[in-house]
Amino acid sequence: MKQPLKGFRVLSAEQYGAGPYGTMFLAQLGAEVIKIEPPKGGDTARHVGPHWLREGESLYFQSFNLNKKSLTLDLTSPEGVEILHKLVKSAHVVANNLRGDVPAKIGLDYASLKPVNPAIVCAHISAYGRDNERAKWPGYDYLMQAEAGFCSLTGEPDGPPVRFGLSMVDFMSGAQMAVGLLAALLDAQRSGQGCDVDVDLLSAAVHQTSYPAIWYMNEGDVTARAPRGAHPSVTPSQLFKAKDGWMFVMAQTPKFWPILADRIRHSELINDPRFDTPANRLANRVELSSILDGIFGAHPVVHWLALLQGHMPIAPVYDLDQALDNPWLETIGMRETIAHPDKPEMDVLCSPIKIDGKRLPNRAGPYLGADSNEILGAIGYDAGEVAKLRASGVV
Picture 1 (cartoon, rainbow, N blue to C red):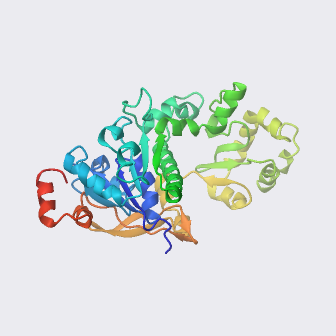
Picture 2 (picture 1 turned 180 degrees about the vertical axis):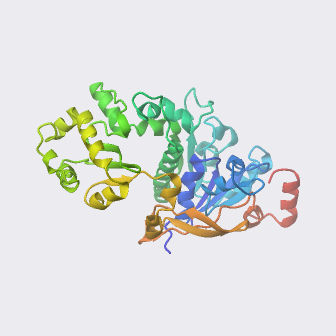
């Protein structure tokens, strides 16, 4: 199938989640993504349990590294730097998600690599940025959720702050890096001049506060938590408990309110003066929620889905196993079984991106250093030289 980035080479000194998540999109789109990993241990993600393919090769690693190659290389050694520069000559992007002060120290920024390849794009994800007093600070997704206000916006009003159940700031940052580096790559192809592209986790997290941020900055309105994950300014748009489980029901725009009332057989609610306008429904949210609780609690989730799905926004609240075993994922092709040397049938998620209506192809993430011989051989190192480099700990 068509892969728009075929022929582009991305070198990535990446680890854990944010950087690898972003470059995996590039690999699935056809770019040759070469993971540059420390010879001892490699990417930290290889050692994250609890599930393993073999010692030092985790299933967690596969989440972020499909379709890539692995080169072990000590970037702090002179020999490692020499190899890096040889690779940069034929590369288009050098990406990393190292601590903010590290890329310049080990020569992964544009100032260091411009003499080698003026068109190279250097993309960086760091915790707090590379150009401020926090550059040396370690930082992770959960810290950003705390400092950017995510935790204070999540959970029940009378409960403690709650983080997202997933590392969403990592994933947002990785995707934003991919967008930035692709834009810079497009420009470099036209101008012959590369640049640095920076995304930091905290900035990415703060940017995602979006409309509550605009409300506060312009009106001093501090958005508070609403019961059951309700929308701050629209109701009913929240979790409701049916007889046997939870569901999210969203009369998100005015047109859905009469549809909801009609289809649950309570048309009298449409013109009830307490609920006849969006403003009245919001002012009487507690009373309306109580009425709807009584209605929804009389029947199981499947009953309400049959009445409402396709007519207005509604979804069941699934546990993770239910979400991933949902037959709809098979219908839309979001699950795929691929081969791994240690697991002939390994189930993975497909890219959400389609090209010409088709999901992008997947192959298993590489073993540590699996492609070192091939990559080094392509830039002129023979088997004996590679053996010496390996013996000295450079690769």
